[in-house]
Image 1 (tube, one colour):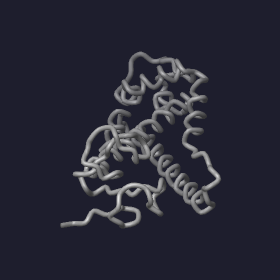
Image 2 (tube, rainbow, N blue to C red; image 1 turned 180 degrees about the horizontal axis):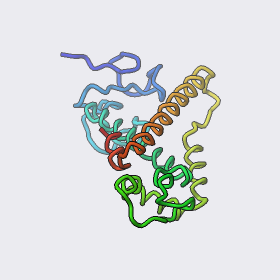
Image 3 (cartoon, one colour; image 1 turned 60 degrees about the vertical axis):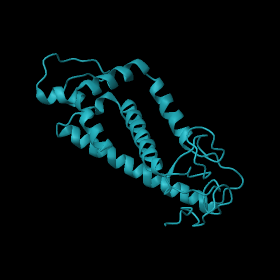
Image 4 (cartoon, one colour; image 1 turned 180 degrees about the vertical axis):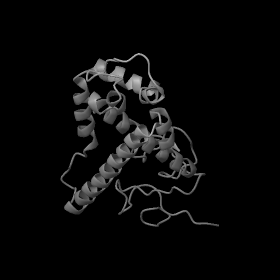
Length: 199
């Protein structure tokens, strides 16, 4: 029988006291019969040790939940990126479908133009026009919420790691934006690209 151990420190104990976990709580992602944080066999609400909510998270569910969180983060970042991008950088603008204010200026569209102005892009354009200058506020709020409030007990080594991972994530997200823009120039619709990211 396999022994279930904390993924941070390797002990079999549950609860608080892990010297290596970010929140000091032992984490056991491999046992689907117990909550990964508190070791309870219960499901639903009631976990007093889960740092993000009060739900019991069983081992098998953790990976899919984590994937969903990452996907949600990517979707949100992609949406904010598209909303903050000037209309002049949209593929449909470059093809003459919309003007610099997002207004449609061409009625009969060829296949490439239709792909650049698919239903998803039309929705983004409508939202961007509706929000107007408030888009900058959304970007500012998003940036502010992504920074961790530094407390006195944070050490320099931890802050350096945090900054290093932040830079790596930003680089990867920027690379993803480039791939999405290249895919659009090659004729893929934004909906199709979004589905590829979810794959």
